Image (cartoon, rainbow, N blue to C red; front, side, top):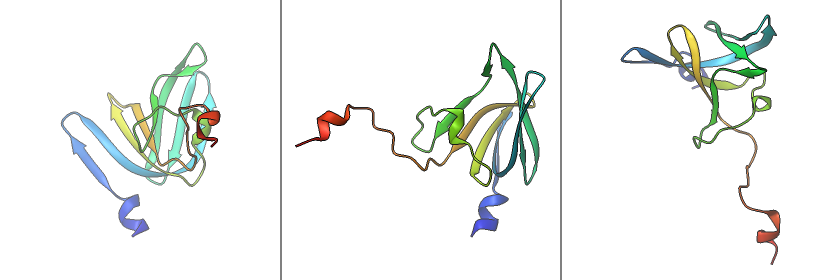
Length: 103
C-alpha cells in the first residue's frame, strides 16, 4: 500500500501533482529544495519566505515546521518550481481559543 502511495503520479493539464516521500530538506543560496524518492524539487526564497504554499490535508495553510523527513507529501509543480506542498498533518490545529472548550 505504501509503494502505491509513493509512486502515485497525476498529470493535470500543465500542472503536475506528484506524491512523494521526503528524504531531505535543504535551504541554500535563496533556494528551498526538497529531496525525495523521485528526484529533487525546489522553489525560490524571497525576503526570508519560500515562494510556495504549504497546505494540510484539510487545505489549511501550515508552517514549514510541519514538513519532516519521511513524510508523505504531494507537490504541485508549475513551470518546474514548487507551487504548493500538501502534507498530511500530525497535529490538530484549533482555530478557536482553548477557553471555548472548557465546560
